[in-house]
Amino acid sequence: MERGGMVQRLFSYGTLRLPAVQLAHFGRLLTGMEDRLPHHRIEWLRITDPQVIATSGTDSHPILRYSATSADFVEGTVFEVSDEELAAADLYEVGEYERVLLQLESGIHAWVYAGAPDAPTGKYRV
Image (cartoon, rainbow, N blue to C red; front, side, top):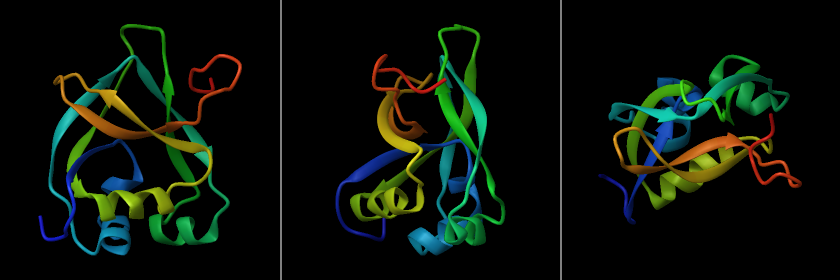
């Protein structure tokens, strides 16, 4: 890895996989491996932040939601990023997302941007 800090694993199922987003926020193209996140599903979120829309090219972004259904899963890519790059990803993601550490189907743990949890239930907003 070209940048300093610890290596972090980041699971992306959406716009962080786009080359334009990676170049804008990490200054490089990321390589990764495919994996899946069980007990989750995708919904769509309307983005209003003009800078995020300009970088991604769309105002419609996927957002991860917890699912109690065992058949539900989300496919994505696991990237290895530095602490600095993870902080850059935090700045890119809008307030409806929260970074959480989850176990993927492969057994590895990775940071994932999911729908921020609903306070009364402690689960992701549904």
